[in-house]
Length: 80
Length: 432
Image (cartoon, rainbow over all chains, first blue to last red; front, side):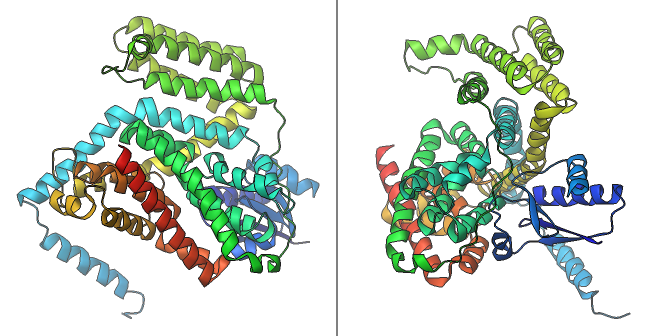
């Protein structure tokens, strides 16, 4: 099944870094995925996220307020 | 060839050509201004980078990694105690808002699913003004009283603004969207005493390393000044112990930094900057390759450095070229600045607040710009007004805020910010 990854953040360097790490992790796992960058603040709060950057996997908020390493994103993608 | 898509290139080239064609190079004022920019950059490099900016980046990085942000959002969430929420909102910017782009999502979050409009407004006003980097750099470059006034006025007036916003729009408060916020997963458990020791020793390093000569400030001040490097070293030692005990840095790595620093101190006893720099480099070296929290600490610090340092350099060059250093004029004649925002009149303070509210300042660049303006004859009151209204608001951020809270609330907020910044400026200007 196709994984849906969404990176929430208004576009500062930390959000870019999170997007890069997420892509790296998904590619290393050979996942079929699509990545979307959500920059609209209204949509970000609709996810219930206050601290950006945040990573959403298939609609569920997995990480908020920090930039995890590609390695820990990999673990998180395998588990969920 | 089709001109769609290509015309932008043409426009850019033509613009660049015309700018160079009529470049006023050779006219004394322009040449002088370029030199001023370089002079100011050199002065920053010599006076502020090693002892102030780099340690401050390490502190900000530590805050990003070690302070539980979840704890803060808990106090600003939907079920939060209303009175407590104002207090937390007004001070939490010191640890949350190092990057200005995190301020607006957090503002939207507090407003729409958290404690409501009042605390959100308080956070938006105080946040950018009291992040650690901003306070440290303001105090170091613009003077201690300006740094303290900035932090204190931001906190106090943010509560006033928050309460005023709440009172103005009380009847609409019930009708907000209520999505339950997702808990942040950054919760860590570390006793408060360890945090205090850890951050306290870092702040102590920064404070003692920057301790200024007494200038008639009393015997105690002079005694500290004479022992400043001993005290800095002592604070660094406490930090090293805290890092080994609580952060999981291996004793071997900590010892490496200690030995390198001590060797440098013995080799260059009359140049304390050398061991200080060696300590910074060694610390970076051992933390950047470390696993766990120590490694995350360096990663966060490095991320901040990449984000802030280039902007600051450009900001310093431009501020120097436009406004010059104390005693030297840049492109903008000092008499203009002194005429518009000199002294401490109501008019000067209002002008500084309004300009500050409209203008966009990249992270921390308000400091060199303010320095140039002060050198050109700006009064201290209007300077504080600009510092308070400036980072809190800009034309682009107003548009985003408008999208979140609507037209009437945005107008009310901007009006309150300008008013409060003006009042702070007037009070500060009459005191100092």
